[in-house]
Length: 346
Picture 1 (cartoon, rainbow, N blue to C red):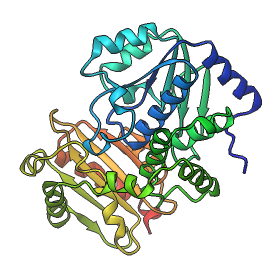
Picture 2: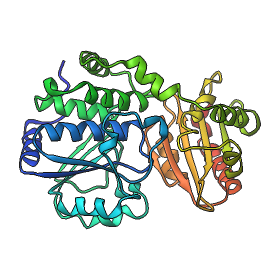
Picture 3: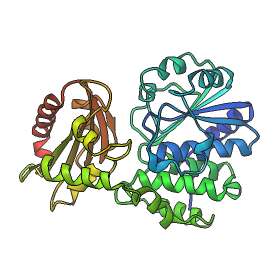
């Protein structure tokens, strides 16, 4: 099965960029998810196998349920070790962006450091409309995940035999989490060929699933129960949509930890004939900042809605954004967004 991503010229360009580099910095988006970490960590290890000094820089803390992923101990948090991260960027002769299409997704402080970078740049991403200027842009929005893309690149460069079990675990975790355990954006047969090749490396896919999805605290379960019981607003036909809020007070009551709301936005899609679910969560620290997460089924364009109403973007069935306003004001914007897309929700 042909799973190559690059043309011959692009593949030669990638080989040349890697061969001419010594120190490589890898950067993913803030609030790194399984795909951001899985793709970055596995690509970094591949580069180390090529004799490069490669370091993954994450903008901020990622969820507790991803701390187990192989290679995370070698990553560097920009918000905690800014001077060290800046030095790495200054010394790097190659910068790889993974799983982000714009520098702004690295937070508030990190973009300035990245904009001043003068070396060579590679972008590997599956989000639409990439804004990052790169010497080699590997952009494929049709891919399930950036981790899938990393596997395809390593395969095309002849590196499959050198993929370790840890690298395969990282890649599988990224593919799994960005497809909701292969329940959306994962109908291409090539995905399952790749999974078979990762299984051949000895990964325990069932354990990977448990490590991500079976690690809830009692407080997290109670928070979900509270939100679904008290806050979920279901807009019955013809709209087939719903939204729910999570306030600072509620998060404090249930001892909220980063990642505790992950996956909750998918639950309302279990409702018969439901097409759209929207989550509104207040930022835990900043005032008048609400994080929006959207999920949909079939052809409903979450990415278009997020771009038009929520200062965000993403994929057709999974997108997000942010609103700088109160939670109640954000609810009114969400209502307007749902009304604007009523025809697509019938």
